[in-house]
Length: 496
Image (cartoon, rainbow, N blue to C red; front, side, top):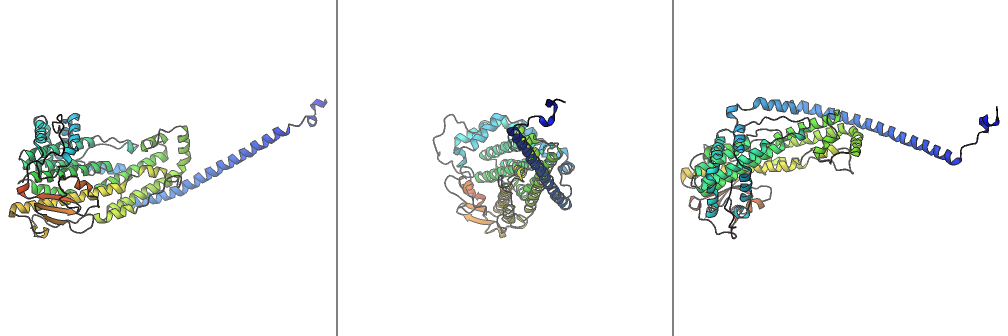
């Protein structure tokens, strides 16, 4: 064997090469160790989260059987009114008769300064605007005639199914409900200025039923649209009563407002939101939904880095899921309390902090809606409905006795069975007498700006809260106030 073949005589690798190899081995060991720690940690976090999730789901199963989305959908379908009693079908037909241009013009006009400063005033609008209302009377007649028929149907059901990703579910009927309610607002005001307050009351009642056609639809956005329709109805009825003295339809509208005030809109929405959240998390955990689906929840379109981060985060999903269910269940519990206790209960529900303070509940923060704000909207709507219902009882008393009641206790039980409670305080609604009428008032949430801007000359509620103002017959339909500004010569009034 030659000297060249002797391995012991082979030259040693350079020291620099040997150092690089050792560094590589060390780095590999460190990275491997980190990977093992991450894998073990991810596994351990997942196990803890899964235990929490099982406890959360078992608790809801015991407390509220049938809470999952498919069960809610099936129950709603079984409870749907018969086709010939379903307000939803009429709402859809009405909306299809309204052109987008007229809807846009009407919404622009009614929110303009020229109109909003006068709404709920006993003064008739200027001749220019009354002419504008009348200008579109014939064109809208078929839709308005059909829309008034909704007054006869207090319930409804829109058929739709939730997607595998519930947050991609389409609900186009909600926009159609808004259109129908806006048309009925126009119809009521047109009737009132044409000295047909009875027709105005029918239209206001129909607008309420447009909202009721949504029923217990299990989405907060659906219930917010229902709330908005209720508000359109109460404000429209108050305006009709500010311009005239209807004789028919008051008892029915009073009862409808009282019944609608008892509807747990927020609870309907929260139950659906919790079920949708549960389905979404389950899809993310099983792989039916991916990082791409998170794009619909407010994240930018995922790329390679986002997908890799999502894979690392999946170990946190069970615990994140459990936390989201815990929060929504706490909100649902709060929504079952007496109304005057709900705001504090909603505020007390803890929400986990954002990253980087806490990375464990990223999806919870994306999925859980602003429930506290929705709850406040529901309580305010309840107050407005109760005030409107009680104010109509006062109007019915005036029609029977040619005077306003001394107080709410004087109203006979057959007109007002009991004085409703203020949902903000739990005490009775307040009755106030003014020189030119009365008001039924809830103390509200302290924000009276909206109510104050609805009157040009004064705040008839004197900063007392929110409520419904009625005027003495002698001042109803008073001559128009002077223009607040020089009118636009091109503005021909509302175009419903």
